[in-house]
Amino acid sequence: MKKFFLMSFIFLSIFGVASAALSAEQVVNIYSARHYESDKELYALFQQQTGIRVNVVSANAPELIERIKREGHATEADIFITVDGGVLYSAKAAGILQPITSTLALKNVPDSLRDKDNAWVGLTTRARVIVYAKDRVKPEQLSTYEDLADPRWKGRIVARPSSSLYDQSLLASLITLDGETKALTWVKGITANFARPPKGNDRGQAMDIVAGIGDVALMNTYYIGQMLNSKNPEEVKAAQNIGVFFPNQKSTGTHINVSGIALTKHAKRVDNAVKFIEFLTGVPAQERLSAGNYEFPVNAAAKKHPLLSSWGAFKSQSIDFSALGVNNAKAIQFFAEGGWK
Image (tube, rainbow, N blue to C red; front, side, top):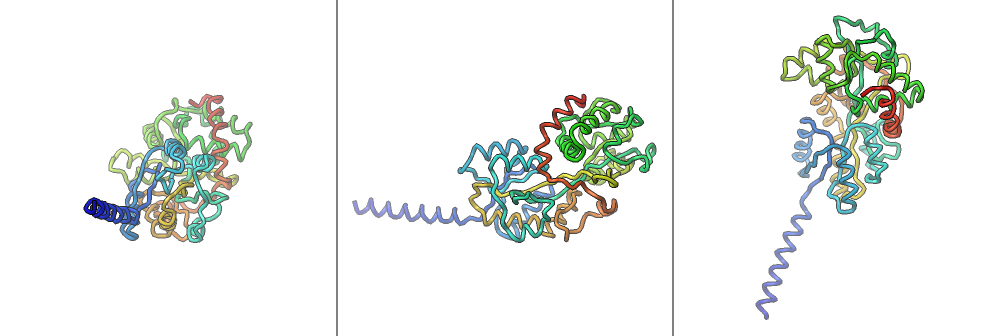
């Protein structure tokens, strides 16, 4: 009997030490819908600098939001990262986030690039610009998103399918700024000007412009940087032969969208998660994000990639990013009604 109790005591002691070691391990668990090499490099740097191991679960944003909801209190997610203000709005509406209270993180990110209740803060932004064939279009011929619906562009516009979240959010912003009637009219007008049925991604639109299929398209700025520095010579050639135009500079401003980071409602490693948010919104990480993925930093003290600086300053839309989520269903409806497949 004594031997039994002695062995039990030894087992429990060993188990207790092992459990303490596991609980003492410094980790932060991230559910991310961003899939860029620049992000992975920063995760490794954070781990190196802090000793906090970064675990990442990657999937598309709706899947991650649903998983966090389903896991509830048992979730291992401490951080949620995604692109698009509308998606961030959906995550907040799903009740899976808690406010970020870090003074440093809130100082790093201006009010305009974070949720009004600090449910999320921005990481980077990208502008949705008009790109054009340098040999067939002069920049002075361009002006606004709305102008692309003018009949003089008939047969000259190439576009992605209406399933593109980037264009859904652009249309959601136009619904906010121009009203529903004008936004639907815009969809019908731009659809009538398509050079071919919508297809492909942003890179594909640039390639089709250079191939002479169309003259103008909508494109996110970071794709231009990626193409200019691509290992594919055809992508480099295409990017070199398209011009970049920031629309609506004399009116409502160019549409920008945001990548954001949030603290999950049931995070189990809040301290580590807050350190991670502070790290990613700090100047060194912000500059690495801009240099690695050609995105605009949210921290005003961070330097932009030279390519972004070469385009000069521009006026951006002044809307609450939640509008991109609020108006998403209406945008999808208008695409269907207007014939943008």
